[in-house]
Structure formats: C-alpha cells, structure tokens
Image 1 (tube, rainbow, N blue to C red):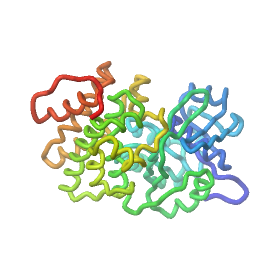
Image 2 (cartoon, rainbow, N blue to C red; image 1 turned 90 degrees about the horizontal axis):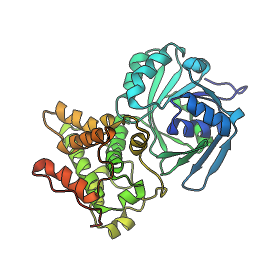
Image 3 (tube, helix red, strand yellow; image 1 turned 90 degrees about the vertical axis):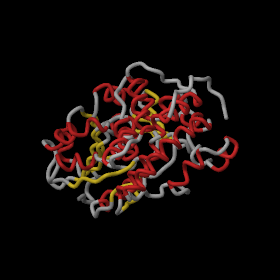
Image 4 (tube, rainbow, N blue to C red; image 1 turned 120 degrees about the vertical axis):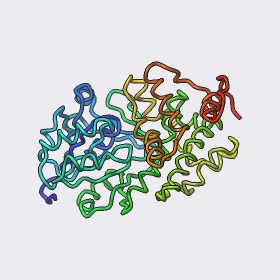
Length: 354
C-alpha cells in the first residue's frame, strides 16, 4: 500500500478529541496526517499546534506546519488509510461523503463507539476495505490544541491482511494494534465497560471519583448484569479485555470501597480529571451516543422478546439531561431510581459513601 519513498498517508475523518489525539500521535511518528473536521478545531490547531499528553507522563508536541487540517473530505482522496472517528449518529453521512472522495481499495477504519458503525460504512463503501476498531481509553480536550489520554488501554482492530501495512506506524506512535478474528465479541466487551458512560455523565463527577463511590458502581453493575444476562441468553460471546472475565466485573463493582481500591486498582488507573465522552457531550450541549451504548442493550432485549428496564431508564435519564434535566445525581439516588424499575421510586438523597 505504501512505498519506501514516502510516509503513510492517513486522513482522520472526524477531528474531535479521539481523532485529534490519534492523528497527532501518528503525525509525531512520521505519518503524513490530515485531520478533517470543523473549522473551529482547525483554527485552534493552526494557532497552537497539538500537544498530546497521557496519564503516564508522555508529552508530545506537533507543530501546526506538521499536520494538515481540512473541513472537507476531498483531501482524503490520496489517503492510504482513513480513520473515521465521528459520533455514531454521523456515520451514515460520513460514509456517503467518503464514497465520493476516496478510491477503491482504500482502507477505512471505524474507530467509534457502538456495534454497527463499521457495517454502516461498509454499506456506503462497498469497494473499500472497512475494518472495525476500538479505542479503549478516554481523551480529554483541555483547550489550545491540548488533548490528554486520561485512562489506559491499547487499540483493538478487526483482523485483516491490510492491517500489516499500517501497524508499524501505529507501533511507532505508541498505539499498538491488537488484531482479533472475532471482533464482535471485543465490541460487546467494550460496550459493557461503556455502560459506565451514562452513569458517569449523570453523576457529574470525574471518572475516578465516580468509580470510587460504591452506589455509582452498584448502578453500573445493575446495567452490566442486565446486559450479560441478555448476551448469555442469546449465546453471544464476550471477549476478556480486563484481567477479570466480564461476568465477574459486576461482582467486583459491588464490593466495599476499601476492597475496590485494592482489587479494582486497574479500573481506577485514570487521570483524576478524566470524564466520559458522554459527560463532555452534555457539557457542550451536544446529543450523546447513549443510543449506541445503553440503547444497544435495549435493542438486544427487544430482539429477544423481553425488556432491559435498567438500560432503558439510563437512556431516558440521559435524554432528560440533554433537555436540561438533572446531571448531578447522587449515587444513592441514581441506584434507587434504577432499582425502582421493579417497584416504587425512592426519594433522591445526598451523595454519601456506602
């Protein structure tokens, strides 16, 4: 796909926090990167360049002249690789836009939340190679071109011969790719972890602080158990992305705070200021991706002829928050509300540790 005479050409379609972070790291590793996004992001990068930091102390600078920015997809025409990092609701439009810009055989990687984005892109791009990928870590935009990776994890990608051509530059960028033949099981595992996104967004707290409160963890455990029961009933495999099998994680979440600080230390390996992308969307007044997270569980339940009341309630609460509703739930109040799907609701209470 590439020759020794030139660097790998990569276009990142959807230059938000994830897109800018991935694109910046790849540019720093020697790839020829073009970020495609909104003009306000382009202005910020032209004024400040990119600064890319992580929770382990990495601090990488990419000057404005070393990374191109465009607001249109035409610049992707010569790309060897296109990384799509738009929000899930924008995937159909992204596919249609790219279909008129890139040629047959171009590799397109969907680095997005949810389960079906790669399939949506494949339908729009039948002559291209479309692969699903997963970004497990959180990225916070701190302004002035500064993007911070606030949690741990390596990139996961669907296994395909095309990966060999661009894997080395990802390695050089400190973003190693782990290929999987059964990628859908990886996506389900990531979705189970992402069920914390609505809980975090409703808490109004940084991720590490939210996860340090047992009532919030219990709320997450309710959502995960509901999802796991549905997956088991449908015979759907779930990959093991953490030291614990996914079926054991809800039990870990419910242990007392002191025990969790020790046993769940890896889950707390998060920058103190990191937030979920769903919190970021609410803060910015954007529509969230809850339909591609908790909503996936609701759709799975519907397809199974049953219900997923906990995840359905999380969808409803996030929709209320998008419309100006409560975004600072106490752990006790949120847990009681989710449990109340089986009975009368309990009144909201103040935050306190259990």
